[in-house]
Length: 100
Image (cartoon, rainbow, N blue to C red):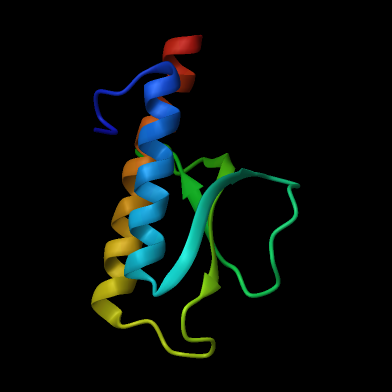
């Protein structure tokens, strides 16, 4: 969905991807936040980086409200969250390129 979504559909796809990342990370909430937006103290923040350039995007994936505070994240789940973040970053970077 992220690869083909545009406009409001992309925003909805990003929200859905964030929700999936939250579930994998054992959290109840996740969202895409812009730099400078406040994040909860218990949040796990994943910097979104444009593929190919390695340039940090102004958005971050913020995963918060852990279902089991203090529980470690399994390696496989952390890799899945990182993959979702990469897909989100690619979609956001594509939107920027199209806007230029």
